[in-house]
Length: 317
Ligand code: MTE
Image (cartoon, rainbow, N blue to C red; front, side):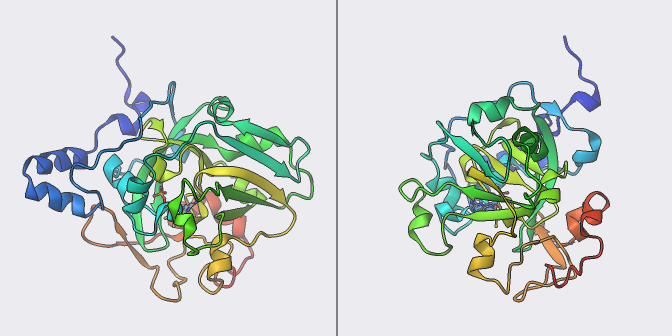
């Protein structure tokens, strides 16, 4: 029998207490409905998508993973923003059930010496997949602790060899209104485009996300491949990516286009810079009652603050 040392056990292998509590509450009928109301899921609403484990998932080096208690799978999949499937937090789970994530390709192009289109199976084999527990801070002042699976985006970037002109990287989400009903609504200009500076994209914390809780990504969370940039507001982490483009000029992202006075290019989590319509000083961790203080760079300052030396983070928000 294989006995795992504590360091070999992935956080998602240990069932968080809140999962037990949710299950216990479900046994008590009305109390269960109340418990789920906080997550946006309907009682009895099943995850229709087939769930598939990621083989050979490794624990991440300690510098890239937190020890905080995890949000539950149910919370993470049922309370989320994915406007392509509707603007309500519970819409993506309901409306993405039949979303097709295979076949799937990601075209990597622009200012690179070796442009290449990767199939999703190439991406699943490109580098060892690690479980990394990250904080997620949404611009709407809620947060979660999520056990992602993936590897540093830099592993992919190295394969295509960016040219000296590659100063920024754009990430494009799939545009397919037949499958993504929210794209019939002009709430944003589709496709969803996000961007990073090249050094941000190369930072080891920037994750090419392929899974969650030890399994391939669930549809509401951006299957089959997404970005996860933990020191920035959640909207920087584009979902269901089909194109990664290296460019010389700073891209105009979907949110900058839609509300330029509210959303800047950098979008670093910064409790001192309020959103024009609300404070960013505090946040509600999903599943908790009392609010917490928001941390500079979402708690990742030690690792990323040097990327912004000399910048006025109030102006370049
Ligand atoms: N990506 C796309 N394509 N469309 C979206 O609407 N929403 C963003 C981000 N990525 C969004 C997106 C926002 S606002 C947040 S907070 C995160 O996804 C939430 O997703 P998660 O809970 O799965 O991280």
